[in-house]
Amino acid sequence: MNDKVKIIGESLSNIPWEDRPPDSENVVWRSAKNPIIPRDLIPKSNSIFNSAAIPYKNKFAGVFRVDHKSREMKLHRGFSDDGFSWKIDENSIKFICDDPEIANFEYGYDPRLVKLDEKYYITWCNGYNHQPTIGVAYTEEFEKFYQLENAYLPFNRNGVLFPRKINGKYAMLNRPSDNGHTPFGDIFYSESPDMIHWGCHRHVMTPIPFTWQSTKVGAGPIPIETNIGWLLIYHGVLTSCNGFVYSMGAAILDLEKPWKILYRTKPYLMSPQKLYECVGDVPNVFFPCSALTDSETGRITIYYGAADTVTCLAYAKVDELIEFIKGNTI
Ligand code: BMA
Image (tube, rainbow, N blue to C red; front, side):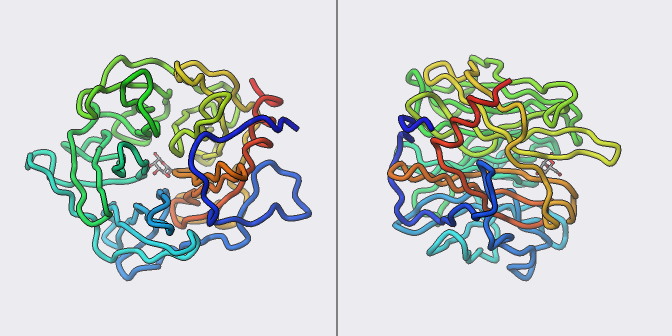
């Protein structure tokens, strides 16, 4: 056991948590309460999944992907006392934006949420000209949400900010894509001096043939800073006879040059195996979008979407996870 690994971040004594079940030896384990958010939590929801949570005022706030019964893809805010039980606003977020061109909300999905410069930044897959790119917005109190410029030209998905500037610049992982279901996909790293202009793109990660991550890879939760590198939890996709299968893996990236991979899991950490991951609007999807961490105990709680239908939790301990990644690296 490597007991020297530490999360660099705040402590979170009220992190939602359940100990590993005695019959499990896995480095990541599921909540016994899964799915913690059912698809029909609010009257207009067809499904609530691929969503992000963050500590807020000693409780929790979140931005949720809610696909409506009209099958429009919207973002809704939500609040929770304990991180398990959520109240989701029945109305979707109306972003405030000076430029009507950007303010025209077509669709939004797969939000990520990070605290940066005392603001909460949201990134998501944002429809612009009916093409996906990365939307960026911030809020200070989860009441008013201010939308900034889209980060990239279409097509792009999985925009995931780092929780601090790196070498004096904002930093974001992202994945160039196409306008459909994208049968390819590498993770790239981009920098910005002002959260508006993004450049200095660096390649981070490519799919690996004949594995669970053979078709495409995409960043998941906000990277977790540790003393040995950025812990990146990500999704990888394989193409089976029956379509895409989304699983979860992890990598450790260099702290100052995060486009350099130090270690990367050869086996997946989690794959769709429970009924609620295998059956739903899109079967066989385990899609991590956010993580809460407690630097005091090393606990990591992962929010993931299952089968594009419901929201679930999984858990890990940072020292065990890093030891596993190092011991099972490609
Ligand atoms: C991806 C995104 C995700 C979704 C996944 C599986 O391209 O659209 O939101 O979970 O496909 O359908």
